[in-house]
Image 1 (cartoon, each protein chain N blue to C red):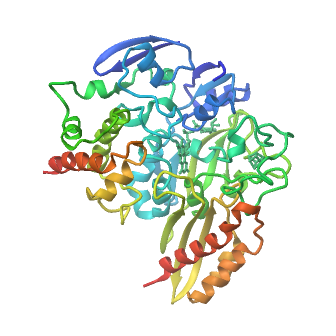
Image 2 (cartoon, each protein chain N blue to C red):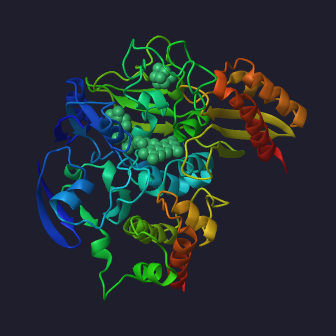
Image 3 (cartoon, each protein chain N blue to C red):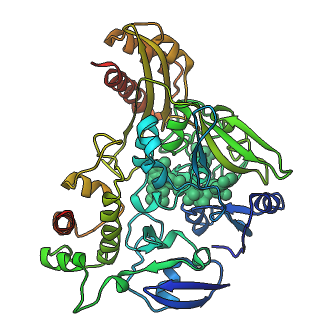
Length: 169
Length: 325
Ligand SMILES: Cc1cc2nc3c(=O)[nH]c(=O)nc-3n(C[C@H](O)[C@H](O)[C@H](O)COP(=O)(O)OP(=O)(O)OC[C@H]3O[C@@H](n4cnc5c(N)ncnc54)[C@H](O)[C@@H]3O)c2cc1C
Ligand code: SF4
């Protein structure tokens, strides 16, 4: 199957079996190994990437379904010397131990802050028709699709809180 | 995964036609690909319906709401009309899966997601749903997740959707385009089939039938909510859930619409429960009577016996929340 993917600003032409997931395309065909394979069943969030600006589990979607889509992986968010605000905050707050879940956490948090800004409610928002506040409970609920087996959660939340607050001014 | 051919449908009609020829639809893919990786589902042809223009949320002529089959769960939960007029639906969606999954999951795919029965997922085990006629390993096995209503001696699995429970309490209808091009719509009660002796057949859909939208009647006044009880505070399937709405008139319950999740092969509705409530003044004694009526016909299978008291208490808690001043 021929598939055109725009990844981190570059055009890629993928020639792969239809069974290839977006995650396997990124890691095994295109050499972008920042996105991680944890459970491979949408349960852990280590494979989270942004597709057309939205966070998804790249393990539970086929690469061929994304012909023409705009994809951003952890490599596209920043690099040593030009870290994104969230990448910087994860370093500052020590938001990881082994680091395996970190690319997924950061991609997920990047889109999650946009979702709050767009006014999306969550399971813990007291009034679903109102506006959500940036609280520890909101961040924890909205990040529940990203597991961290080292349990660095308090520091992950601190890092996200710092960037979220900065954005809200 | 076993190999398959992949086609992207350019219209609902094309999708239906390929479906009738034996192809399987893929929308968000979050349930189907999970099952294909485990070779629980092994389609040899996939039709990608994810780009069909069935992604609108529009008012209907009578003031109801038409939700396209391809609307993502996250967009539906964030929709202003849904949040204001059908809040139990927004709450049910937000209680399900994760932010990433809701960005992919579609209205149609969510309705048709398959059970989370452990034995259905374990291809080394007999399972009538996965392999008709092979037996049911859950009966006599570990049944913590299993049904207390509507099951049969062939299958005791539950339907795992949160969204569908709220849709059932809201009297939603499912619009279907058949392979012959005819469009029909059916209530959610008729849409899902109980297992009987064919637990592998879960809905009335025939090959090629494409869900095009879900239609909600005009919003009713009153209060509504969705409450989900699970093993973790987030990101876990329901043990028990309650979607409820109540309209009061002169201090009495004029109308009650309830559906229950995690307890049956489809979102469960019980007219006796609603009838016990309607016309009466809310009180703890009334709620207890209604909850007793609800579980009167429950049948348990060992591990899942806890669902009877849990369902009763959750229903009573929701009734209290919806009627307290
Ligand atoms: C880790 C995890 C946790 C989850 N937790 C929850 C939870 O707590 N609560 C909950 O409710 N759900 C939960 N889910 C399930 C999730 O909601 C479903 O996977 C999702 O809604 C399925 O939608 P989809 O569009 O991805 O479906 P797909 O996987 O694309 O399709 C599912 C089925 O529907 C059929 N289909 C899809 N669209 C149509 C259509 N328009 N017409 C006819 N047939 C169609 C497909 O052929 C397929 O058989 C969870 C899933 C995962 C992976
Ligand atoms: S309960 Fe149903 S799904 Fe589970 S093993 Fe028995 S037949 Fe299979």
